[in-house]
Image (cartoon, rainbow, N blue to C red; front, side):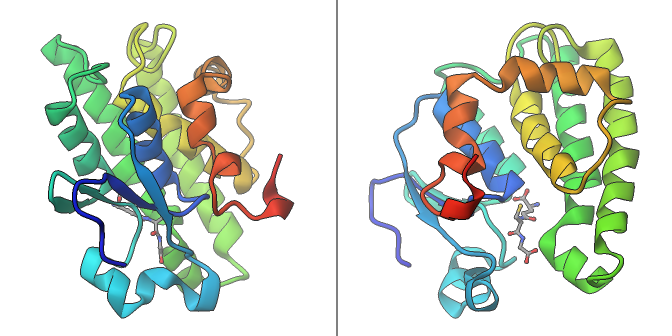
Length: 218
Ligand SMILES: N[C@@H](CCC(=O)N[C@@H](CS)C(=O)NCC(=O)O)C(=O)O
């Protein structure tokens, strides 16, 4: 699994919301990259292999090989891209708005996704996992909807696409996957509709990934 020097390589799984966040940012910033699929399913999960543990000791996707280093943790990767690739800023210049973007990101990245992550659901068990995921996504989305009530314009914070949108859209996909009723979240739904045809988001969508199984195509 050694990464080739010079090339930007994203280790990604088609349905991983954390990988999807990074795919959106790479597309919005028009950063050429190669996707190396890592199956979270095949043979109990390629992310648990010795080779992949060298890439990400947390045994999770994504990981991004860039500028001679391998970075893990999607939010940290997003920040690195923001720090080093100035084309198409995804953080506003106003400090309060920047804080609001990070706030929404954190709620999703730390407060929702980890609770419905594959390894957590496996631990919770087959019988309880769907109800568990639904509960935590619902709880998190109640908070996100409230925050968006104060911050949203066309997108999560104002009228420009930010890192908050990169985190929100994949989480909405997960919510649908676990049959969360999204009707109590009209702002989330509106932003999702706003971005569903945006080329950077479409290209990053699970159904457009090289490892998306044919039966999962829309
Ligand atoms: N905090 C990490 C979380 C990464 C993560 O949870 N990735 C999931 C896919 S979205 C994964 O690889 N799960 C594998 C597992 O749970 O075994 C990040 O934001 O990158």
